[in-house]
Amino acid sequence: MSHDHLKTRGAGCGSWGCLECLECLGDRMEAGSRSSSCSPRPTGGCGGEDFGVPRGEEEGSRRCLGCGEPIWGALPVCWACRTSSGYQSDGGSPQHSKEELKVTVRPLKKWLDSANEVKRICNQSTKHNTHEARQAERKIKDEFEKLHRFLREEEEARIAAMREEEKQKSRMMKEKIEKMKGEMSSLSDTVTAMEQQLKLRNLSFLQNYKTTMTRVWAAPQIPGKDPGAPIDVCKHLSNLKYRVWKKMLGTVQYSPVILDPNSADPFLRLSEDLTSVRDGNVDQQLPDTPERFNSCAEMLGSRGYRSGTHLWDVEVGGNASWIVGVAGKSAQRKALISACPENRIWGVCLRDGEYMALESPSVPLPVRGKLLRVRVELDWDGGKITFSDTTDTDGTPLYTFTHPFSERVYPYFSTSCQFHPLRIVPAKVLISVDQSKQCV
Image 1 (tube, rainbow, N blue to C red):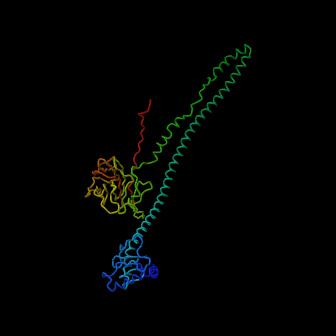
Image 2: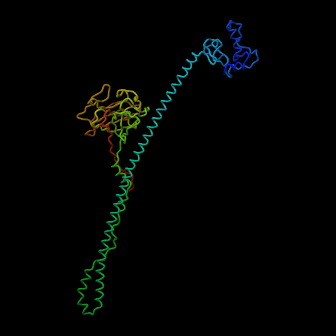
């Protein structure tokens, strides 16, 4: 509100919001306005309307921006500060106001910076999610195309087998019919000849009787009414879906652990089927989500365990720098830490050419030769993690950690090798049919 407007609206009204009354009061303040003769508040003797105190605001509840004394009315400063040399009509002390504005603007700028960072992260996440969705969609289509191709080929093979059997049976019937047609023609000639013999006189009949009977005895036997073997429908249809599914198992693999790309350090590269990982040596600029490791080339499996016994084999092959084990859900993901039980990581490793169990301090492993495959066996309820060498055997024990688990734990992997990935070994799938409850 401008200075002229205030004078017009409150001229001579005796209000704290009226500049004329404030000027009168200022004259008395200069002559000793702090004395007891000063009126604590203008009395409104001019009869004008008081525009000074904002509605709903208690008198004296606000403080002067200049000196901090209680003030009344709409102006942000008291009379003494207004009459100081630095005062301008539209505010208090310019220096004080600037400082106050700087303080006020600072958190707003910080908020804007944070908002811009969040916006950047959201945009990055959106692009990443779009890319991941397209990649996943392509992979799903590829996998289903393989299944469709398998089913089409299996369908064609089974239909071809059935038709081949049909052709064989038809060929047999055709050959039988052709044979019978020849025999029928010969027999028809015999019957005609015999009927002619019956018309001869006795002497001629007797002379040809022996020859005629020889032809009768040489006649084929009466054919049976067997139509031939039918199509073996049961062979083609019995448990068809089960047999196709069982055969399909030979073309697919089951991985006991699927790697979680959302937890992988940006430098790691995963295979399309999420069963192997290596160091890519290039930062992929992935969104730094809470679940992602970002200080070392490490990652987790996609499924965590909070009970039971679980087992998986990891092929380390020619990888020269790796860690294999399990990690607790609360393991640090945003700072460079040592992989050890104190930091919720239990594992074995190959480091600087030595195989070690990651205790504090590390413990050498009893490995003879080169370790190519490691088995991890987690007994959550029993509080044990056992590592074994399954390179050439079913499992030579290497090391066992004991710890009473209280949280979900995940398969853990780390590697800095660019050429030889860590690979989850597919598990054998066994099929059994329970016939114990079948009726006889």
